[in-house]
Image: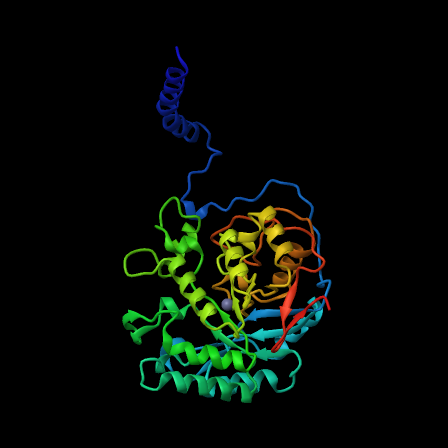
Length: 387
Ligand SMILES: [Zn+2]
């Protein structure tokens, strides 16, 4: 028998026995549960070190939080407060968070409300970003209107501009109908310029995890998450791909070199080689690590090199959302920060990266112990959290 025949006969043997064997094991051993995939919640058997870090080694700025939400494309100038400052401050004090940036501060009257609530008694602990007034995009004169809004938001106390993935994936020419408005649509040029002129960083999220752009089938690494939230999938005709969205954002960064862009969620955390290319090409680009330690921790060696090489361009951020039960890896609280500190400051391996159960549940490993990896953006200039 030659090698090929040998392999063929082994394969044939496996095919003949695998499935009947499995069924037999279940039938003959009542201890082997038969269950739907949704019931499968494996617990790691590894006995690995667990280091508890209660306080960040350095006072931190959490660049990416959602203490308020605005109403997206509806144009109602409303915000929803997810927690009162008094509920948040004790956690910040315990965990050594000096400053929290509330990115989704809204626009118009909603922004005024965000500023009022968060600056009232704690002007030095919170910063608020403003958001574009999406519902007005189709109106004539929008570019100037939006640029003026950025100026007045700055005068009122907003210190940056936040762009949700609304741009590129939800915002359409006629609100909810018509074609998707492109990220590099020239109608936003004066907004990007106005932000740059005022030293307001633009925190911009485009795209989403790569698995949201691939078929929701047995090969999808976020199958369970997408099964629970089918509307999170952007797979299929009519949706742009991840790379198309990333490249549109790159054209914006190239066109507005004096504006600082913070590409949220590591831009595309699954592809650090591409992110490195982008960082090398665009000096006005930074990234944050919010809600992506699950991706970074699954490539710990590449992530460690990435952190080492780009340590002054990576911001600490968590995507913390008070009472954000729908987003388990963002649930604001002591535990969320402990997980990030464990990831950034210890050599612990293979631990859960979310304070609540996550459907997409590959545990993570920290990239490496760090002294200076944790950086943060201040109001208008970059400040090392280690300083
Ligand atoms: Zn966020």
